[in-house]
Amino acid sequence: MKDFNFKKFAVKQAPSVFRVGTDAVLLGALASVSGAQHILEVGSGTGIISLMLAQRNPNATILAIDINSHAVDLSEINFSNAPFSRRMKAELQDFKTFETEQKFDLIISNPPYFEINASGKDILARQRLELNFSGLINKASQLLSEKGLFTVIIPLDSEKEFTENCFELKLFLQRKVSIKGIKTAEPKRVVLEYALVKSEPKIENFVIEKSPRVYSDEYLELTKDFHLFHKKPL
Image (cartoon, rainbow, N blue to C red; front, side):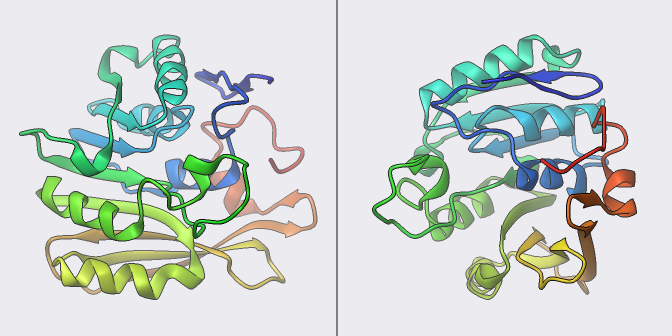
């Protein structure tokens, strides 16, 4: 598989690891990362999200974990080749049983969001087989720092369930970004940010393409520090 090249780093890809996609790029670019000193990415895959966060916040140290050993190996390679490598680490870990004394200022994930099904494609990355929403939220609530953020990108139709589960564990919605693939379509994805303190959530909307295969101005602006070219969507 071809490398995915950004302005300041490249991401090697492999058939055994879920490839770089628009959801990951959006999460890496939209997540609130300013001020976060300790970041945990759950389900690192290629490491693309962690690399974007490392570029955006030069003061952050980042731990990226995954249950897939191939993903961890690939993340380690991609981190080692990046200019931020000294601040980045990849570990083979099951988030459900992950133990640490560290509290994190940002816990971020592009989690598996399909129910278990018969598809054999990218099972761990796509299906809630090893990590469901409840398990992700429960562990994040334990590891989040007092002023930290728990940030995910999920399908819009899962938002109600996800937010209710967070509320039960005293994680409160801070920000919601509804994402349209194209301007004329309904939103399909949503970036959600939660914290341990109550706040009036910020509600935002975002459009990826203004017309078929033509990026919107807001997408070009959001990713201008990353993408080399903007000729066509991923």
